Image (cartoon, rainbow, N blue to C red; front, side, top):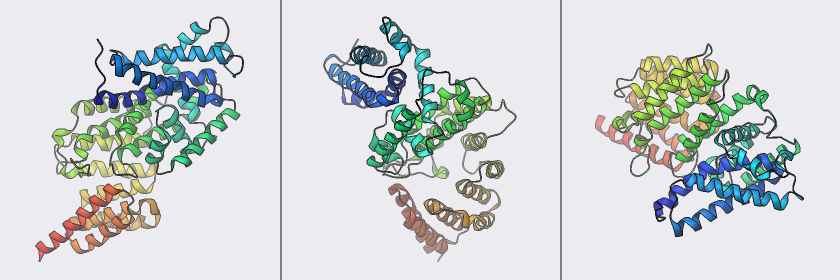
Length: 426
């Protein structure tokens, strides 16, 4: 039974586009190759325009995904027949049994296989990290150029040029998405994990705009992580750890922002709003991830998130274990953000003085893009130590350095709180 298209349906179709366009692109790219990516985008766009037009009249079908796949398949077959003599196609899909062979690619197993092939192609070492992320979001996640630009603090024109260069590079390498790619898994799995992690990080805490969270990016990262974890191999424990980290983090989303979209600190979040089913799923992934002799950064970050999720209150948090995890993390991935978080955990466990000493040791390693995090952490520790005047000055520096609207609102409230507490002391 079909239902009439409503405004809510229109928003759901946007999410459906996210989910399905990557699947469709992955199949079409196997047929046409990267040199015909514009044609592929046109077919996908035509399919979704047809959906909007048809569904607005006849209503949304009971299985919209199946409808989209069927229509895109028909458009694809027609296009293949028209273009077979003038467009470079994969030889195995030409000839008399064209429709049968195309049908095979639309089977669930082949759709999944096509997505994995496309993902590993996007993570080609010939491309730089930013190009890999942009191409993955474009091809596998259905993001348009302006959305990618907003997510990655860039411009639409820069994204357009980067994606063009990336596609051109893969075209020049003559990447065959039908050739066995098992050998690429070991070579590129770390890159694939990193790309998924970076996509999730940007969604979890956006670096630009006026929203704290971009749920589309987060859910897309989780979808890709599930896809990668389905491949058998030595990498699976790390994939499960990444999945656990993503799920533990997403479970707290309902409590992370207030009705005005502003950040709520972990300390004051309503833990009854946390998604317990998601926490349960994350716990299961974390258990699966432990079937290994080596501990990755994802294992440690997921463990830290699990400790937060299991604590009945902020005060009951096991800060000693969290500090130990961060200490271990800095030996595996000694990045400045991990060092700042290590100092914060240390201050919660052993007191502000310990945290401040740790921050002093790492100050020279803090680059400009994350200076605001460093000064905000210092302000928080001084505030906890009731040094409200000095804390305010550091919060002010963090405010001045911050680029994100919501960060500025958050820090502005901290500055005001310093003033109030300072007055109370007097």
